[in-house]
Image 1 (cartoon, rainbow, N blue to C red):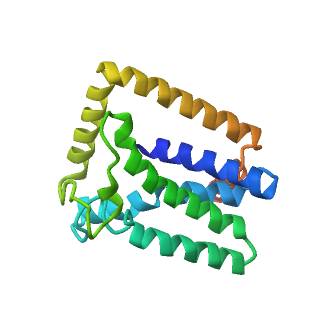
Image 2: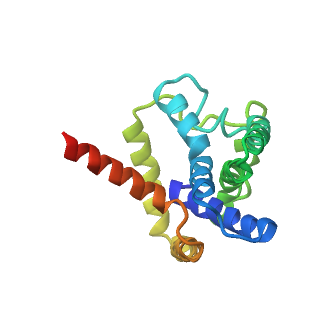
Image 3: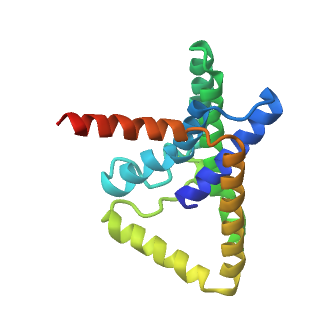
Amino acid sequence: MWPWEHLSIGYLLHSATMRTVYRRPPNGLGALAVAVGTQFPDLIDKPGGWVLGVLPSGTSVAHSAFVALPLSLAAVAVARRRGAPEVGVAFAIGYLSHLAGDVFFYVLLGDGPAFGVVLWPLGSEPNGGTSPVLALVSRLFSRWVEHLASPAGVGYVLFEVALLAVTVAVWVRDGAPGSDAVFRIRTLWDERSDRN
């Protein structure tokens, strides 16, 4: 899955969880935590496997359910202890939804679920090894564009547009949580630039 797809699925699940369990929309820290959680496995495994060569593949250690489940539980426990349970829950939702997305994404492409992706070291197959990152991403992007040009790709594009539209609508309905942090960072940057 592409990063925006992971983010969309994770945010929708987080919003639904917050509204169902806590009867309120997500807060800004929760929105940022789910964003980090949805990208976390790729931020660890892709550079570690594809660039540095210290991991067996781009979907290995951080994509493993054997790592993700205990790490998610630890995030929930630490956040709860620090008085911010939503942050831990949001990170866990993002992280675990990333793994589920990688397993079931192949169904959209007409294949079966790829459970081996989350079973490292037992069942994961290396997907690339060390290679120039731009060449690898270019190859993956080319395969994606090729798929979009196929008849099955039309349905995928419609699904993608609908998913992103629904996610933006839900995020706006929730009060655009997390956007205030982006504006604060921008303001701090502008103030620092003005001083120099």
